[in-house]
Length: 74
Image (cartoon, rainbow, N blue to C red; front, side):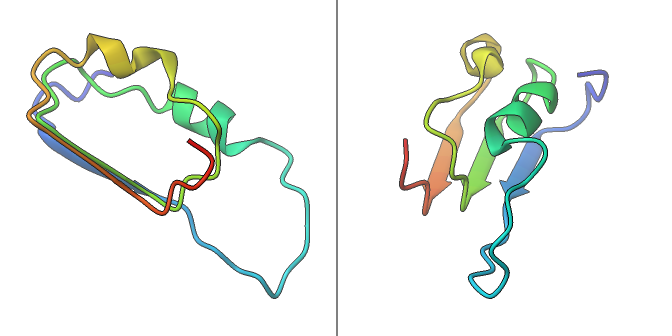
């Protein structure tokens, strides 16, 4: 949130089918606390397995580009 000069952000989760484990913190919880500053212009989210957007997505009033790839549960 305090990174006012950050204009592009790419958040990516790795997919590893070899390891079958349950994470302690869900992808949704991680994404919720990674709130960028409202000046963000470009956001990419890759391989996110959460079922909803974070609450902060609506405050990104400067967002020009949003890219979602392999977010199959959204």
